[in-house]
Amino acid sequence: MTLAAAIELDRLGGEEGVRRWVNKFYDLVAQSPVLAPIFPPDLALTRAKQWAYFVEFFGGPPLYTQAYGRPFLRFKHRHAKIGRPERDTWMELLETSLRETSGDGALAAAVAARIAPIADAMVNHDPTHKNAYFFN
Image (cartoon, rainbow, N blue to C red; front, top):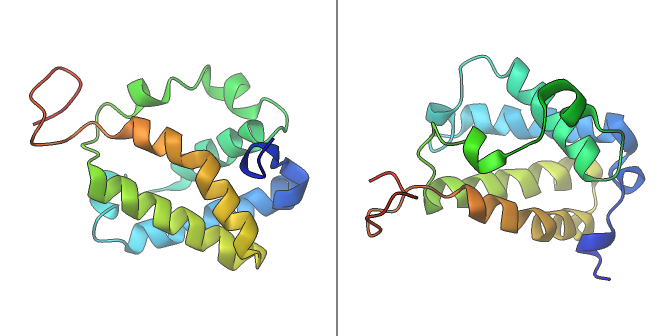
């Protein structure tokens, strides 16, 4: 088992550690010229959903599923044009925010490696693809 697959909620500082991370992350998103336009101006609900998702994703209680149902992330992100620049910026800010809130670069890199395939799956815009899976 790789380090990325073995990350547990406690290593992230528990639910409160994830809350600090998510809050820092969305502070950075709000300042990002790439990401801010695709997020709502009020990020309160977005923060709450992301916190609940990560708590559950990293082995905590099923907060996201209980509150919002099954994730179906690609479907839930269908309204936003997400290309490689948006995906890459999202990942960069995610890793930066965790590194800053945890002080642990290795942990931030391991989390990024675990989340990268999910971020890859959210890409739905590529001008070179002309099919039903992509906005154009």
